[in-house]
Image (cartoon, rainbow, N blue to C red):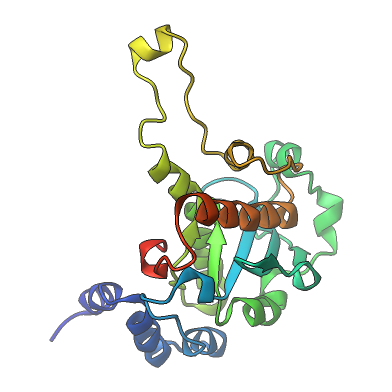
Length: 242
């Protein structure tokens, strides 16, 4: 008889649509069951036909096991447009205390979170956006890991989902972004794949960083530009998601 870890390994090796089907059967949380039952597009679906959701978290630090989410921004979009009227932004109370360094970065203070809800209070609304969409992020290790840990604390279950990671796409497009020692001596600069610097390469406007909603919108615009310049509307979603 296989143990739970081997069962998990089997599920994780399946294509994403089949993973969703298996996880829908296994999930005990109504919120997560509904998420998986909302489905995942076929890997052969053109990216132009996929419902996309740009999402960004501001957090108290970079380690999901030691830090917490303090704000969430999201906006649904397609390659043809960004649905700003459906954009949402929440400030949520972190389980762990704010650190001055994080306050300096994102500007969310103790007074901002004193009356803010716990993430659990907005989960139903958050998932009303997530269901049926493929998340688009800039650096997947934040959004995917922080949401997974947060849900384990609150629902007793983690979450799995594919993402389109605009930072990973930039890393793929610039594999030699770190110049050698000799290239540095000749004046060659590293190629930054940070969100603001990546946007500059496509002529996108400068936005103030470290606001979750603004960063979500900035990420949506960046993906649109990446597809336009380097890929095609008919690119399979399986060639882009991780």
